[in-house]
Each structure stands twice: as C-alpha cells, then as structure tokens.
Image 1 (cartoon, rainbow, N blue to C red):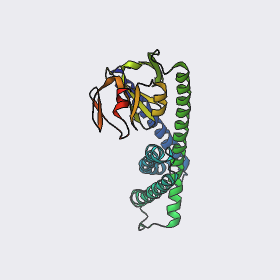
Image 2: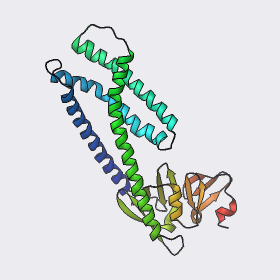
Image 3: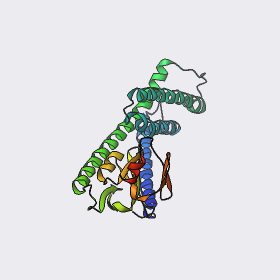
Image 4: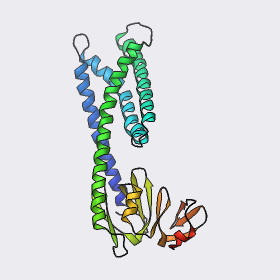
Length: 268
C-alpha cells in the first residue's frame, strides 16, 4: 500500500460508510413516522414532525453505544462498567427526550398548556422508546465485530500456515481493506498496536493497518522483532539510537519498557 493509496482507500471507505448510515436513518425516519401516525388523532404531518425532532437524540444515543460503550467496555470485558454506563446513557437520553417532546411538541405544536414535569411512568416509557433503537444498533455492532474477529482469525491462520519465522521468508501477507498486501519483512521498521488493529510501518513511510492483535503480528514475524512496549514491535535492524527510556527507529521515538535490556536490543 503506497502512502497515497492509504488515505484514498480510507476516504472511500468513510464515504461508503457515511452513505450507508445516512440511508439507514432516512429509512428509519420514514418507517417509524408512518408507524406512529394514527389519523385523525395524530396526522402524518404531526408524526413526521415528532420523529424529526426526536431522531437526533436517538442517533446520538445509538452512536454512543456503538462507538464508545461497546469498544471501551464490552469489548474489553468490563461488564459492570458497560452496564452502568449503558443505564446512565438510557436514563439521560429518556429525560432529554421528555424535555424536547414537551417544548417542541406539547407546547409548540399541540399547545396543551401543561407544565413540564417528570413522572416515573413517563420516564420509563421514554426509556423503552430510546432503548429499542439503541439495542437494535448495538446488537448490529456486536455482530459486526464478531464477524470481523472471525475473518481476522481465519486470515491469521492462513498467513501463519504460509509464513515461517525464518530469515528465508522475505515477505508476510496481511489483509487490509479487503485486499491482501505483501510486506517485505526487512522493510518493516516497527508495528504499532492500536486496540483491535495494528499498523505496519515500513522504511518508505507507508502504513498498512490490519485488524489484528499485536501478539498475532509478532507470531508472523521473525525473532529480529522485539516487543519493545505493550504497543510496539520494533525491528532491531532499524534501531538508530536508544537510551533507558526510548528507542529511535527511523524518525520515530518509541517508549521502551523497563524490562527491555540492551542485550535484547542488540540481538544477543
């Protein structure tokens, strides 16, 4: 992957993802506006208006679940933190939905003349409404992560069967953006761990981002790569300088763990 191709692939991927999300929310808006409409009590105009007012809050709550709570807590098996954060999210979103519904629907559109108040029954009803959307998209995110992990493990097993940890194997094969990339081992300066992803950085300055763990990446590479830090693998042949706290590889300064000896850096 060249330095120009990587940003282009990322931009195309982001555009495709944004388009899919936009289509989903438009379809969601139209579908639920039609479902909640019940003429003559609630006209189609009123139903579409109410969904339009309340949708941004559901979108925010859903994305908080998908891109904050699930990656930060559920994926890391922090179940108590996940459940408590999830409960706070639903309660806060339900309370805000009551406020928005009162001022932008009851007062502005219907003009019922009622004072704003929060009751347990009303709060629970709004929690159920918010939760239905959040649960739907949260489940979809969990399934997506599951299938990504299955594909990643299959790719790792396939790569491991074709790659040995000897100097006679000049390349490794990794999958990124649905393409298989061949990386010359001697050209890899370091590998950076980024949660569920790793980034292979070469002497040409190219980055190849792969869905994988740093441990799996280390298993693919020869012994010349040392686990310098919990987030970095370093190719010893590309080390330019080091001290007790850092190691310089190319133009990158990488933190050095306390238990990494000078002998290990020299390959002894």
